[in-house]
Length: 252
Image 1 (cartoon, one colour):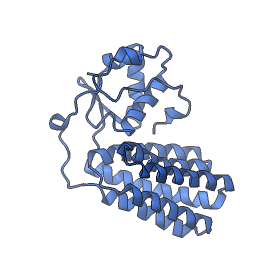
Image 2: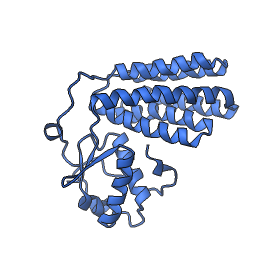
Image 3: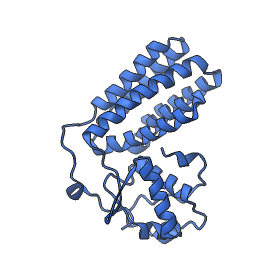
Image 4: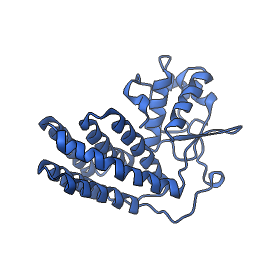
């Protein structure tokens, strides 16, 4: 998730329905940070699919702010690779290539291995309790048949961010948050068939290894978990065409 999330003021969430009345969503208190946070959340929750055209004028109406402020928020998201700004065309939710998808998961395996080592070395009882509660929430959510799939996937991704936060390493946490958000975008674009129940079970197995103090076994569990998620993607080598697959802009 973009780094702006930590300090952002809450913005009025985007409507899930593209035809929603934008005037009803107006927030005169919206800041550049809160707009960036809200858009990032919508991307991660798959309400803004890859290729969506983010029209500055429409977003300005949604948040009741100037296009200058909207442009600044979009620039923030472009630095985090969640959107792509194309000269003379506009801003679009990113469409990661197959190579980028593989690189994102490759980097996650490297970074999260270090997260695991730091966690095992320094974790307190409260950290374990918080992560165990997160896993219970995952399982309760998975038992709810009517739960939206994007909610389940976001919750599973949040486990990795929460784990990084427990290390107290701010830069590492920011990097993990960004990569988890990009992974959500990749899973959306490449139709991941990841079994969320399997992911939650792997989170629980991982935490048990951490409690035993076996850092390298926990690292192996985490890297294998991330590799399995990558393998669940349908990376057939075909890079999607922005023109043919462009999703109708949410705020059109």
